[in-house]
Amino acid sequence: MRVEFSVRASSAVARGLRTSTQWQDWAAQPSAPVGELALDVSHIPAMARRRLGPLAKMAVVVADDVLAQTALADIPMVWVSRYGDSDKSLQLLRAQVGAEALSPTAFALSVHNGIAAQYSILRGMVSNAICVAASAAGPEAGIVEAIGLLHEGAPAVVLVCYDEGLPGEYAPFGEAGAAEFSWAVVVSLAQPDGPGFALTARAAGRDAGDTEGSQAGLPHGLQVLRFLLDPAQTEWAAPQAAPGRGWTWERMHG
Image 1 (tube, rainbow, N blue to C red):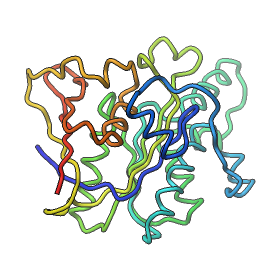
Image 2: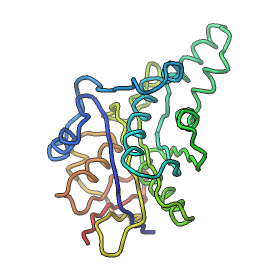
Image 3: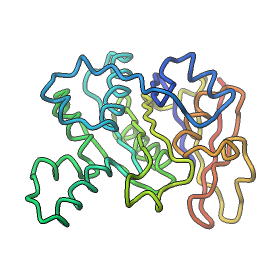
């Protein structure tokens, strides 16, 4: 399977990284994000803001950024997260162990599609919202879902990828090199004579090799973002998410 697409707008946030210039510098020399999270959520109504955890705020900020860069007010969205807002789930389990009453609101906010649902309500969006959890291949699965929506007639699709390290008792089961990050892109179908990207399901048995992205020890979502931001990379074979299955990213030039 091979899909082709263009990126019309992008935004990202991680520790110590917020502006386009900072992200371009990072893409040229990637490393684990460190520093403060520069999140301005003052534009979000106070009542809604109180419901958003740190990860949700990161996702909302980048989603708002890319929507502001397009004239399309209500377009489909694909939300990708390996773990979702796992801290809320862990808090509920701790409360249950302590025989405490569980809050229905807290449960509603803890489910994997909770952030997408909050955003749809916050922005009054009625278009499709798809939530994806695909282990280490989340961004690739998100692109495939976005392409499906584009072929169904959507003029563009917002793809939001967000994750953080697993908290507390979950931490030993987390991904190596986990980091807090969120990025969003507006995806459209690639034009025959324009720049864009291609994503291909890699044949079984072909290994990704020791790529620069994997050498950096970054979570997969940030490795994908690095490829999208770095014009020097023309092809990247992503590390296999499972034996015999992988993806190859390509940069196309019109």
